Length: 390
Image (cartoon, rainbow, N blue to C red):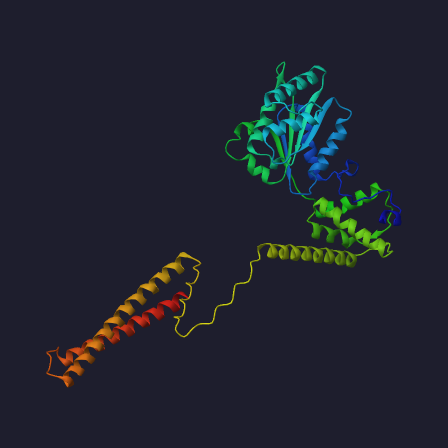
């Protein structure tokens, strides 16, 4: 759309990894050097990792373009969480070999025969596995087993493994020592620098005939880097949106204010998306409203309130101590009530009939005072302990 307005021959910031737009940044040049080195060795594994959108697939597409003039039979598979048998079927399918309704032994034998026939024809076999971090342990082991195929003492297949950052941790896991020993080189692809971001944008525009229309203010490039962190895929998305907006405004200049407006729109759209997701989650887990409590009858005892939820072992210990002290206080209160009841009955019997031998009145008073003071002390301890642990 905007390419017509600005007289461009194509879409400069498409998300499809077209090798015609390959940008030779410092990191991408080094990664390509590792891949070319692996091709020269003709054996083992080359591993390239990188965060999402840093250009790993672009590396492979650019490599395949270079291989068109070489005697290399190359195939690429994008892996998912598949077992070793399905992995072998995918490999056979990419090399245009039969794979349906074949046992694992038949698949392996078929691949071995194919690899050796390529070697007899003077060709090398390259297998590229993208998104390799998704493969389970058994499938990784199957890739290692393929590397064991030899013909006349020479390995007949080589593998390049491309994956996200977490694959580095997977490779360090126990049980993959044999696979690690077959790795010739490994490289982690990083995002573009600030200077490379500006050069990258101009490089892609130049590829479609950009001659300064639209004019892009210098501070826009720094803003693009800050917003995208130098990740090529993010740069493509942002620049595509920025040029589209400028063309709709029929503007031939892209300013920092234009960039600010677009980034705010994108952030707002993302916030709305997150809010909608949260609403969907709330709807999915929503429960029917709790029924209202029934009116409490005067003859019905009030229900015991539920115990508070404990958030930690310390809270549980504090609650247990409070319950223990409350039990002691209740016992003291019962003793006090019993003593008071005895005193009342004794006084009544004194007026109603012949005297009944009882304990010394002064002793009874002393016991009553002691019980009351003990209960008060325990109550104060309970309150103090509760306040300190609330």
